[in-house]
Length: 121
Image (tube, rainbow, N blue to C red; front, side, top):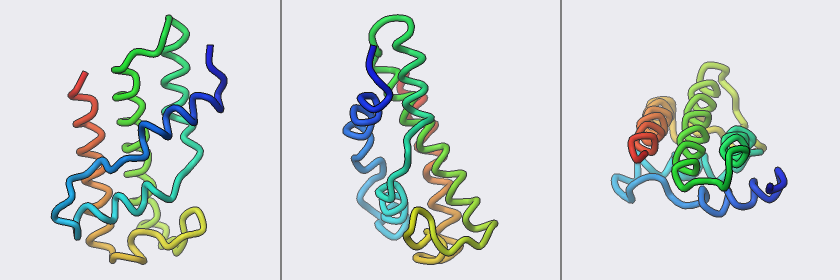
């Protein structure tokens, strides 16, 4: 069984890629910006730990973990707008950096991509 920290490192290696097409960059770059801000990645790692309880971690578990993390981040982008938060993890929030309309779409795209990952299994 892997430790929590080992699973965080493993997940981050798989997660820290762009989850969006390159163009139009005005739509997708804000998502990449937000995801590179990092986070604890607790939710996806708990998914992987749950899968590991039954044997080895299956590839589909990474798809589900990625969907969970994208969905969680979509809620954070929208929450920052509602709270008028200027910073997230010490950096400018998406709505402050790109504007509210772009931030709303950024969150929506993350939600759609989360469902895309679930559809892979």
